[in-house]
Length: 386
Image 1 (cartoon, helix red, strand yellow):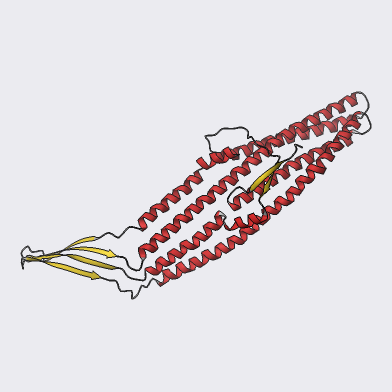
Image 2 (cartoon, rainbow, N blue to C red):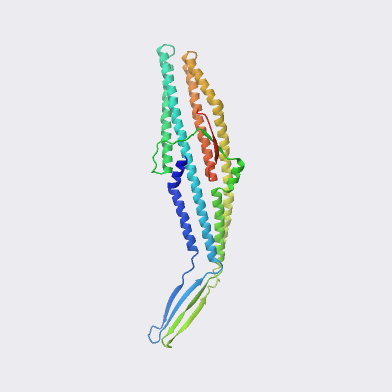
């Protein structure tokens, strides 16, 4: 699984796209720190050669009120948000690959289970045929056995189809350069999440929460930028004026300041402040939703773990014992084939339920991984093969 995750992180186009966004925001940060360009202007009064006056001016605008610093701060906060989005994307890819990997593992075990079940059904069908030939049971028993074998054969076809589907999904995540037909791992290992206190602490540092808090800071920086824009900038002008009629050059200096009479940037300031307030409310709502989702995933883990333990300790051994006894009794003529068939069906259903519960157990851990932004499983305990 570690190899599959690394391949996906190295070649996934969504990760590459998020990296490009970070690089784009870094370019915006560079642009935010530049000074405004000067302006060169040339004016000619009176186009007649002997009486015309030529004025050459160089104008340099100067930003006041800390606009440049506020613009840089907003750009840096945008970089932080882009990096948090990249981290969130990393967590999503890891969780998606983990989910697809364990789904493939479970499918492989389901195929093996279906193959073993088919062998059991085939043995039962052959035994029933021999007993019919010997005249010990009705031909109806053999028909029931063949129907049971056909149903198990159908389950094997479905299991193989499910395995191929999960392999396609895993290949889509790892990229077209890696070709594989199976995965290597232990699907029967029970994952264990971290302690409840640790999970609670990790909620506040989850990538989605960090991204939400950074959005609040970014909108705060944008509101400071809009406030700084209330102070008008000045433009200094310096140059020379050459009058052919007078026959000499004169220095020209000046300053221009826009008068904030009609446009005081009030609307933009209000918009930026309200967007900052909205980002704060979104962050609080996200924390509530995140806590609910984490609690739900952990509760699903606890519930499913109880199912797995019950299946492992009681249901599977009991079903296996009942099947062995019914099969032996049928061979000795003490039980009807219907009893053996019911015991076989019960055993197969218990094994299938065991794999489904294991799949749900891995899925709940994967959901915790996705929500918390990192591997939530601290360790695992192996379980016996059903």
